[in-house]
Image (cartoon, rainbow, N blue to C red; front, top):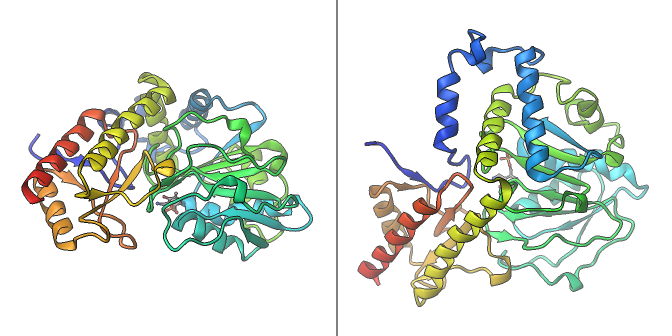
Length: 367
Ligand code: PMP
């Protein structure tokens, strides 16, 4: 179509066309109710089916054991920066937590948590977020209530390729930008959270997956809508949940299941990100990714053109030309500069190849 673009946005990000088409088809009359999902009571039979099916499909996709609860909350990833300490700090007497800070999002989470407890940094603060210090150097506190990390730093492109081992201390992870893009063993975590607007839907709903023994320890000052025990006891319906966002998330889960589940998403993520990283490596310094190879994200690839600090005029030209070629939302985060290529599940291998071809062509014309 005339307005067709390829959207490499870091988030809110591309949704599968099939999901949008299904939503469009059902927009005016959902399941013969005569109304849209937006207009259904959150306590109606139809919406109950939507939220139940969405949870069941997530459990299937991630192989979530029965002793883990699934919550659909509001407040975004940022809401969880508060909800996590408010719910989990007091599960041990010291009100202490360890934070592994590897980029802006984990830094923000640690800063927010300081309002509520003793927050300890596990790794020294780096001058740039381009690596994950070796875990043998980590300074973990055995009395911490939990250890927190961000599985994929969306801005800096730092992604853990492994799950940290924290022994008996529960591990809490922000998976906002890589959930359902790689297989993970849920039993390694105390809690997982993820905003929807990158890999799993539209903004407005935040997933929380939490082991049941960690529920019920909220600090008295915890706002009731963030109290995991209250939300869990009410199946995420203590108050009106973000119904339409939950519905869209459900459609995305069905789309992933129909395409082979998380393993298929992971294979595609490896293919897509390898195509981009291989081009960067082969570009002899024209394109530069500043990250250590062992923590390069499959989801968000930060790129500078013209090493080491980027030729800003050339980067602007790249973005302009990309846009003319209908390759959009490739600008790096304002705190990092350069480009950022986001390759979430809805971006196909073919679309990624179109971008890689454009990058090759741009390099040939401008080097
Ligand atoms: N964590 C990560 C990894 C993110 O990428 C973001 C948003 N880009 C957030 C947390 C914050 O999410 P929200 O904007 O939904 O509060």
